[in-house]
Length: 436
Ligand SMILES: Nc1ncnc2c1ncn2[C@@H]1O[C@H](COP(=O)(O)OP(=O)(O)O)[C@@H](O)[C@H]1O
Ligand SMILES: [Mg+2]
Image: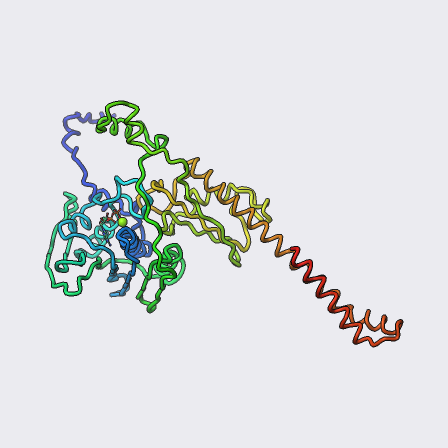
């Protein structure tokens, strides 16, 4: 028998080294939503559009976003996303667009589309990985020149590489960001397509105008309102939501002198911060689920999502909707769940499904039950109306015969009697419809 070679710890230690976070995500790009060419193309657009809406709103600007997708070859595309937001100051551009885990949102507790400081860097990584080309970022801040950058990520170091940086006069004081990149991908027109992503985005962000020029032509989603939603406020953490490790760190950095001041200054006592919108009843064949988190459509991983689990756990038969035990309800139904929270627990960095924390499940179920009760009322009303329509049709069918007989018996004109009977039926029906 052969003896296993024993490897000394010193030997093993030679291979130990820190892994750059950029390298980690380059290797695991599926975490960020780049697991296949179709989804990757949508993800690139999504990351840029989410930022455009987020930061325009933040600056109090009604967003106008132009998305262009040009097919260069069978599996290669040039994508550009331009907004009219506040822009990014030039000193911050390389870090903001080409250093993974660099962003303005991670430490802020408020309802926001962005989170990790990964989004647009993921797109940049994916672009350079599949085409070897830098991304282009053009930005103006409403004063000073327009800046053009070509950026890549030094993956081993997780540092931005500035390939070029030029400036241009800005006589019209333009502000905004334009991101351009070349990527590998696959374009589809239906299903989980860029168009449908933008459509759903327009649905929940009716203050944004979104223009899409793609391989199938141009589509414009005009804004439906000129009113921006009230700005999300930053809040302090709720003691319930803070885990021990984080609490310790907060304690070691706080300036509060006593435990009482620490608790009252570093935490918020917000009671209800769960804002859940729901409802929807569209005449469709199968149940359709629309999921949103802080106004961003969730497109993939529907079956892993807390919203789907909550929908399954609701007893829809109580509201007159058919459902097999533990399954999604069936029938002409559209369910829209929007979770608004300062901290949405996504199941992964790709931000496509919400983790099924018991508190979240409970809140979604309560909201769905509330919507279910309203829906049941509506369905009952519709059934009653249909019933009374049917009754009326039956009456009307026999009226001429009745009129004729009554006419013969009373020696009056059948036509007159028929008209009177018709009026009686009509007023009777109007009455019962009013009651329904
Ligand atoms: N279109 C944009 N307008 C203004 N600022 C932007 C835009 N895109 C990105 N940024 C800045 O770059 C940072 C990094 O973006 P990103 O990698 O998507 O991370 P996140 O959105 O999670 O913060 C943002 O936090 C923001 O400060
Ligand atoms: Mg982002």
